[in-house]
Amino acid sequence: MSAGRYDIVIDQGADFARQLVVKEDGTVKNLSIYNARAAMRSSKTAATVSATFTCTITDAANGVLKFELSNSITKNLTPGIYYYDLEIYTGGDAAVQRLLEGKVTVTPEITK
Image 1: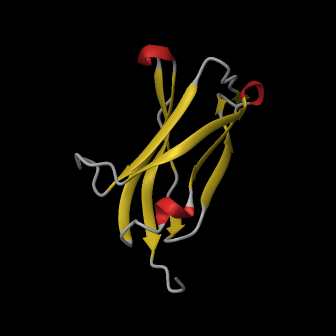
Image 2: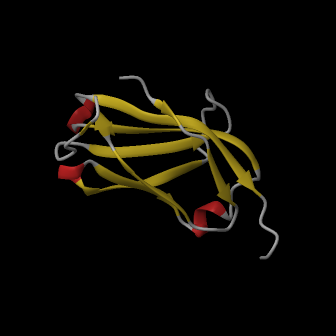
């Protein structure tokens, strides 16, 4: 299964969170043996990570996971375009599956 494309907008200085249900061939995927991770970079090949999302599997049996950034992280992001992906993986990266990828638009904060 190839990764889905989902572009996101993050408001600089605000909390960001998305929750999703992982399905494979229309059936909820049990995530009990998986962890999740996601990061964003200024370009797809940038060596430096601009931000690392906190990823939490909130209901493994029903395939529910959440990825988020706190306002303390987003306030330090320079407004502009970034790229991210979200993966699930097992211990030692024995199995890795990219779920989502896309662009991140960080909009500038006005009220500080």
